[in-house]
Amino acid sequence: VLVVTGGGLAGQALLTSDTSPSSTNAAVRAPEGAADSSTLSSPLSVHSVESRTDYRRATLRAQVTEQIQAGDSRSMNVMLSTRLLDCVKLVSAGSRTLLVDQAQYEGSPATIIVVSPGIGSNEIWVVGPKCSATDRDEKLHQQIPA
Image (cartoon, helix red, strand yellow):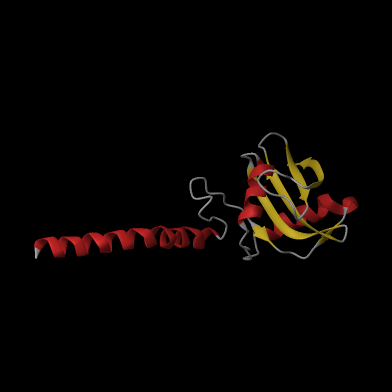
């Protein structure tokens, strides 16, 4: 009886342990809206939106500043795909991320990423839809005063 009971408990423990990591991942993912199983070891907290703004080169600085300021009063936080989260990690290179806006640039789909390296100025990255952990798909990169 002891062997049968012990075997049943061991089997249940194995089945439970196989499903518990995904439950944990979901619990970790929910509050941030940006972390997933590939980022649990290095979580990244970003303010992400889908503003539908069509950013323009001539007005990019003002548009970015407006989005960052609106972020404090806006409750929208859009979940990022794993690919886009990897892209943000590549672009930010460990710097604080101020904004990730899935929007448009000059009429084409783009993501606007603003990072603060902590020394003098912030950086605006405009990346295309192919941006990933290994490819920035960079459309524009410029610095703005912090």
